[in-house]
Amino acid sequence: MTPATSGTAAQLVVIAKAPVPGTVKTRLTPAFTAREAAALAESALRDTLSAVAAAPAARRVLALLGEPGPWLPAGYDVVAQRGDDLAARLAAAFADAWTALPVPVVLIGMDTPQVTPALLAEAGRLLDGHEVVVGPAADGGFWLLGQRTPDPALLAGLPMSRPDTGALLMERIRAAGVRAALLPELTDVDTAADARAVAARIPSSRFAATLAALGADVPA
Image (tube, rainbow, N blue to C red):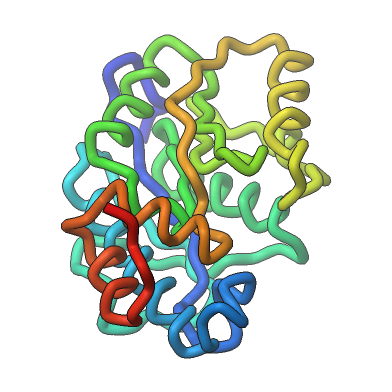
């Protein structure tokens, strides 16, 4: 294999937890039970995996904490997450993907079921002319990170799940002197209010259907 060149399709990596009650989307409780929160997490993961499956990719990877379930479609390479914290697990997912196939890597989580194949394709396209692409999240974090060639220093020790996580990442990118591009801001599903807002944007999704089945008031 040879390193990536301009026009090479990126590989798409989804980093996720298996949707087991009590271990995922804990901030959705007590508005929802642990089982309901897990059902929402599973539907968000299914929508995300479907979007990735419909986007152009050199390879599709699920970096998973836990065990695969019937929610996993065909066409994914499953690798175990490794690392002591989220920043380390993100860096490891980039490194493992690059080791398996040295082409640009676009990584997303399972918290933005509104992601589209077009957004993912745009992330890959932007890596033709930029070293890094970032999808900022409304909570101050980021929902997507793409790297033409993974640099572990971008993520090593990065404080995660804070309102300034995205800003700190951008500071590191600027300090590295690399060209970066931004995608549109999306909302991570962390709270019940987030769930309602996101479902309203994607009324035909599995996520919206699951929220409606739980009796949540989804705005028109």
